[in-house]
Amino acid sequence: MLKASALYLVIVIALVIGLICSSLVAVAYFYRAEYHKKFRQDRLNHNLLSGISLVLTAPDAAYKEPQKIALFGGHFLRFPSRPLVNVFVLRSRSIQ
Image (cartoon, rainbow, N blue to C red):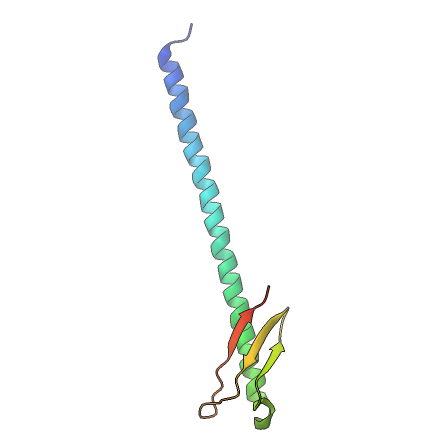
């Protein structure tokens, strides 16, 4: 027969392995969430810079009325009708 301490040892080892596996799953989840957050932020920054360059290269009268322009993959830039000292305020939002 096996000693009773062997059963306790197996239970402790199983708990340690379970804690290690669950922590790896949690770390992978949070890493992926942060990766997607950074990816969305980079894409939004790219769209915003594209909108700014679009406004700066267009004639002055082109954006007097509010407009929505789709730049990349369903993301819209909204151009307001009130410029403040020839500076446009751009808002970008993902529609998914």
